[in-house]
Image (cartoon, rainbow, N blue to C red):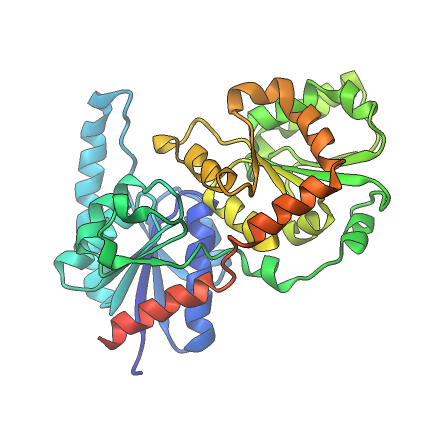
Length: 369
């Protein structure tokens, strides 16, 4: 194959960025000479994460629609028009053979421009409920790679390929043992371990659930916790723990940089139900309690969680009920070995370890055509 030139566009959250970088890494692994250009949204997370992964990125001044204050959307429409003009210039200069959209603000104008210019496009939809941008782009997309069954209610059936979501490479490559991971984290091998993760910024509901039940945690010395509080809530939590007294075996971390070790140490995971978190849980076969965030478009996290619950591959707790019941349920569940094994076996069946490879197969087919 002659020189390969690919545009990858999208971002806004880790759930969009991790798959995008995994796809780029897989292209580079097969074709080290390939030229890959990312197009993101100015001021969003991808503008730091993508260069840190070794790729060039251009930013568009695009922003999301404000559904609550419709009058504010005049500025949004102007930014969208500017973004389409800028995307056209970038695409003309770079001349990609194919464009990959992973969802998020920037992928809309970028892929629309590519479709108008006759450049084949491939969409990657991480969630069980399709995002607005991908729904708008789907008609003219050549391929749509999805992570859940039943996506023909959003997309043309003939374009859909069930590939799963690519996850962070280091999670798959590092096979740490439970024992060594627990010791590395300064915990006790003999205790059951619950990992609580609310994303890099943290999740208020999960944090309040812990803070409301410090006495219950103290009363259950056979269980230990690894708790990622998130940067946003860290200082307040440290202050409140100082006042209330921190139970032993509650390991509090603002951010977990080595998620492979944290997952390996965990007997049970408590998490939001974002696409990338769910893909990681499936791939690693981890029993989990999912608490979907209510603050996301189309309530897609609840739909992600229920797709697992229907297959008895996770336990679901409503955000509004979590502060009362979550910690008690988690302590009860982690003590039930048979239940953990059952959920683990079911969730493992849903893992798609070759997602990045399968998506790149489709990208390369489009270039050949």
